[in-house]
Length: 172
Image (cartoon, rainbow, N blue to C red; front, side):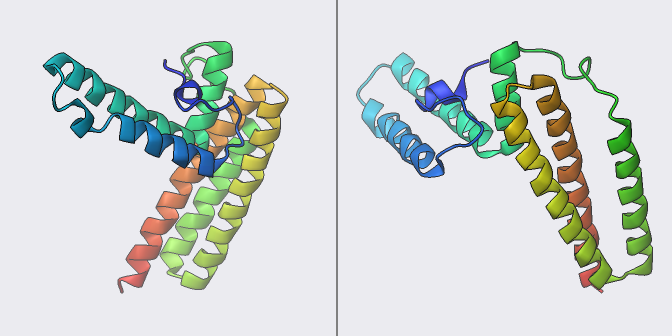
């Protein structure tokens, strides 16, 4: 795994200076622009194109909090199979089931106001988990950070499902 932080010459930290990230991205892409390699060999052109793709991939990792956290954890622990590292977070599993049941009921009732309130509740839960994740990463509590990234993945999926239901209900 390449280190996206090193590629952008940024410190390995969950809290990123987004302006600095954007500046570094533009500078890297400018230096790798195909016009700069027009008179170079085919191999140099291909390498610049590959490096440009690597920069784009690294940017996507750094912009996404879950991917950024996964990257930080992997840099400190090495690549590990996350399927084998699954934590049995029973309390959150119960919360997931409750939220799914609530969402199903709201969809059946076609209650857009309550769905909007539910969406706000889930967004707030996501913000709280994100804050906990930042703290866990800062404390180098990798196991807790892994649990929290799993929670955020669930929140992301649930949010997408809420949006799908909202679109369906608003189409009527």
